[in-house]
Length: 199
Ligand SMILES: Nc1nc2c(ncn2[C@@H]2O[C@H](COP(=O)(O)OP(=O)(O)OP(=O)(O)O)[C@@H](O)[C@H]2O)c(=O)[nH]1
Ligand SMILES: [Mg+2]
Image (cartoon, rainbow, N blue to C red; front, side, top):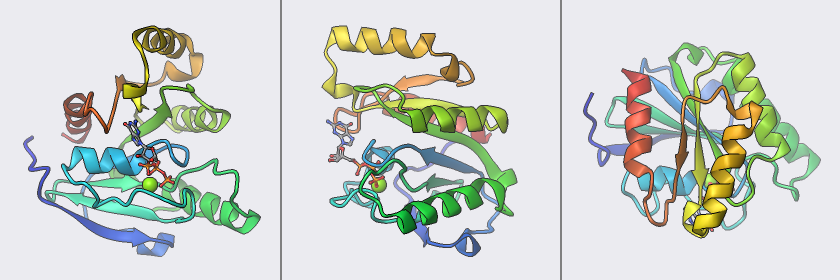
């Protein structure tokens, strides 16, 4: 399948499950902690500087953002988790909305892939591991994008790759892609992986 990554629009910023679009387009969702680089990854994939807003106040916007990519798929930017300064009410809203995307979503059959973002400098957090286990138990195909890899030197990169390939919670992943929105490393590889899941 060929897509034009420049033909994109923000379909909807959904604060409630009732706003999730019903169009019969395959969906690829991005999951990861707040500040891991989800919006930067979306902008990188679609050659935009700022369609997906980078956050100056991380974790404040609790919405599910649906990007229409050339009428062929929705990239779904899930709200980031693990932002320590969130209030109890904000955390509740996060879990309700994310939960409803996976468990109370009439279009869930259209979900083809979750790209789990993991910061390559830190490796998986406890929340990342919880998410990976949830995806594996739910039989949702998933791959890992290891973000901000431009920040690693050769030794750190080797250590990260060894650590992640030895991690039992990463065994269910289809692929592990080193990614940098800054250097664009992994961009083509990630796009090809996404397209291979929506065929
Ligand atoms: N060096 C480097 N910095 C990055 C990269 N990707 C993102 N960043 C920086 O990391 C910070 C967070 O990036 P965002 O893309 O806003 O992260 P997010 O996951 O969308 O955050 P929330 O929307 O709060 O969940 C910003 O300061 C980015 O400039 C990368 O590949 N390399
Ligand atoms: Mg963001």
